Length: 226
Picture (cartoon, one colour):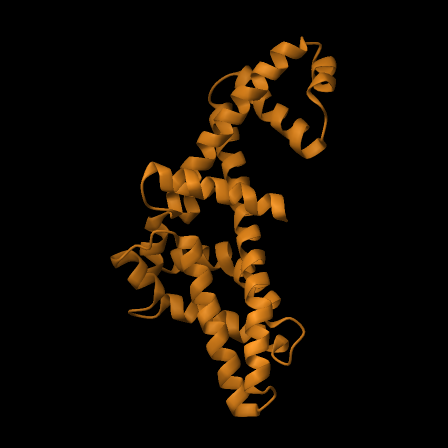
């Protein structure tokens, strides 16, 4: 659930709480792995990704490290912050290995960075967006379970429309309801999802309402580009 991304989790991980650190790694390891795999591609360092992932989390957990700084001086957007940390360590890792093993020239390093950083960042943002949207859907469903049959049906309506791909008229036929009624419910369902999405985004994005709205738009745009 989206609560696992909240700032108390980061504070607990920064303070050395074992359960918080375990949750933090579980939440973000696959995201960091996908980013680094895309960044390193099939290069000579691909087999060292596990070590680099470990280094990312060591940097997060060490005293005075990433999470410690995050808790004391919260970034405006944790998504961009974590991506930047992963990217900076990947750059340092490549340069360190180049100097130590001379597997790759300085020119090749520059070419690798220019050609893959943008692609890797897109991979990171798209995977992040998928997680955020999943959390928003879970939040909307949990709220619906506490409300009414109509609220739960609106959750199912979004699933049928977006995941199954059924048109509204076919859903209306299956439910034996007037299409106008289902269209109205669909509009309500989308608004409920937007509110859930904003609540999830607020967990990791600090700022004004316009900042939150802009991040919500970015999340949906990342998914459209995937």
